[in-house]
Length: 172
Ligand code: NI
Picture 1 (cartoon, protein in one colour):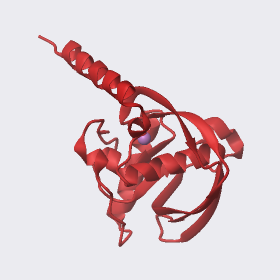
Picture 2: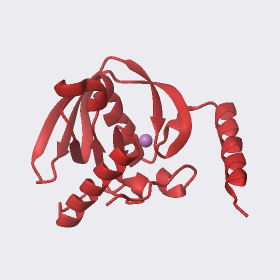
Picture 3: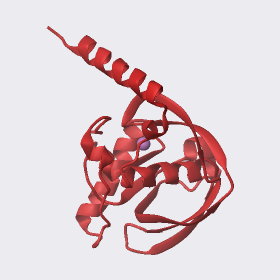
Picture 4: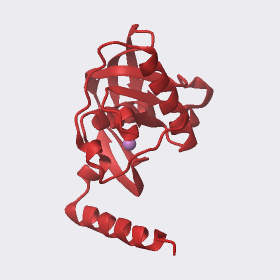
């Protein structure tokens, strides 16, 4: 089921998400819904807070870039970066910050620890777009958005653009 993606400046996006204690059918349904929602929005990643659920769960599929060599759909519960080095700069967008893009420098290579939807503990080495996506989604779990990295000027311009859009969207 496709869920509604909440957008900036919804205060739910700034809250720190809680760890998942028990991986239940409800969590598995959440992960499936998040994947469906991500594909529908043509994103490469989605975090539970973006569908207004304050739990540490993310989905990622970077195969649009990596093709057949990619890992396919990844569902990560309680993801945690346990090692990282190098640097990569990517122009990022976010389904919760529509019509906004910003270049962000992140770790170029990392090792992430997470639980699968069956509760199995996995350690995964990530680089390139996958490393960017993992860091972007974990930021969501910590209540951080890409717009937080923008200058005040760029943020103000974006807020003004949003207000204008909302006014134009009113139908009479
Ligand atoms: Ni995002």
